[in-house]
Length: 255
Ligand code: NAD
Image 1 (cartoon, rainbow, N blue to C red):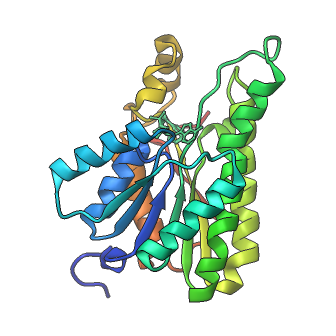
Image 2 (spheres, rainbow, N blue to C red):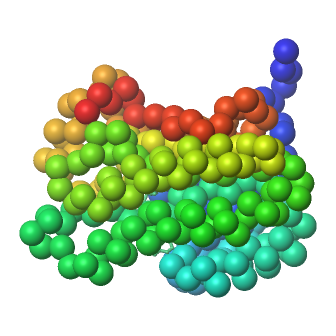
């Protein structure tokens, strides 16, 4: 029987959050910091990373958080940054692969580079980050890798096929790595958010959002905190017997 804070195992853990500057990622960074974790916050640009760090310093100046902006399409930069974090923090306990880009391009209009760009950030970077971090976790015989999938990894979407394709593949990668890394004490899971109120959703056509919302049994859009809560659970020892799972956090959306 657990007493007190159910997430106490997260205190002093070193957590990487990619796409940590805003939306789901920023909320996740705050949620882990509030549990006493130490966070390596990744963003795509130095400027947005600095802004996120400034906001966090206002919320709580004693948070332990550092910012990084490696090019997630460059495996060498990823390796270098992960080594730097290991040196600076003394290890890496949790990796949250959250950076992602959406896509609403019709197949008639696709330029090949655009399809590749979506796959590079949403899928390839998840593989490369996991590849860089897994040996560090193996040395400790313990670690957690969490991926941000999407409800479209179950239902696809009407237009913008690279996005669901990438997220279906993220589920496959999650389950494959869970099977491969379980023997090394590394758990790998994904969270599949429904429609969450972030900039990504604000950029979508509002009629599309309305028609999607009508399929949600709980009849409300999700909040970034809902996804952060799932990450806290999956990173903590409360989920120590869960691996290879894709957990839907979508208000019960049924396609
Ligand atoms: P967002 O656009 O607010 O944030 C995306 C984050 O990814 C940002 O921090 C950005 O810096 C980072 N990022 C984007 N391109 C990058 C690049 N090239 N290099 C490095 N970082 C990059 O979006 P969000 O809604 O918070 O999405 C976060 C994750 O959740 C994504 O993986 C997204 O696919 C997934 N998701 C979101 C929703 C939703 O409704 N918002 C639903 C399902 C899944």
